[in-house]
Image (tube, rainbow, N blue to C red; front, top):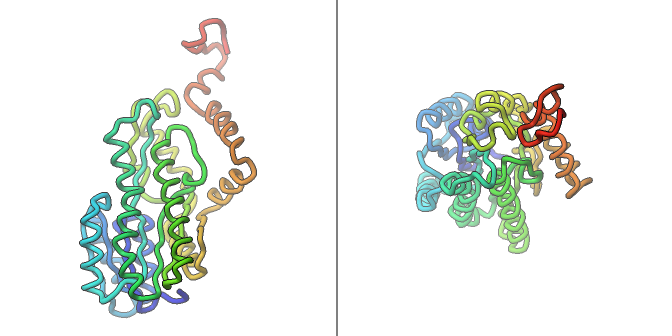
Length: 301
């Protein structure tokens, strides 16, 4: 797909962040848009910005929905095909984050994150694929994460959902290659992107004292790792679609961690544990002279 001019793109998570940036970038290139998000205010703002960015009048529609609800995605896909006369691209971009230990994780949190991050991708892919197939010129873009390549403590559910997106999309791409129906797929692995995901993430008390000091500081520290802006991320993604890339890494942090996992496929975990111990509240307490760990009453560390 060398051009997006005159194409139709459906985007989930379009109310902010990368979804909004993709909508604006595609509008500039003459692409008609079907935008979805669970935040009606954010969705309306994106629509206004995309219309302002378009050089020519474009057809743009919106739908407020929860991507975890399978029927909502199928209804939206059918409505989009009817309203736009066809669909060429679907960006399964909606995502959320959760910080919790495995032992302390509750079922509601697990269902929430897997429902959005993984099932949202599955529902969006299955709902739109028949319409992409009809055009004979379609592309599915599924957002995983650098944490779909690399795991860290306290993020097991997030890691699981993003590793699942990676495996699902890589298998999907192979099936599409075998079928030769004019539809392709790309898995996107962003590093730290300047979006609202840190502010909207769930952080449970069970990681406090082990991995973080307090919730507000954790969110602030997390946002310091966001080194790539959403507009740049959108440009990289669209370049990857043009090149029909199987995998798109966004940001130097994603490239570095991808290389680390390639070089140390299992040993990288030991490195993560070492660094986490040094930087965690427990490690910081141990590093102070005269501070004794409650679990180590025998002496000063």
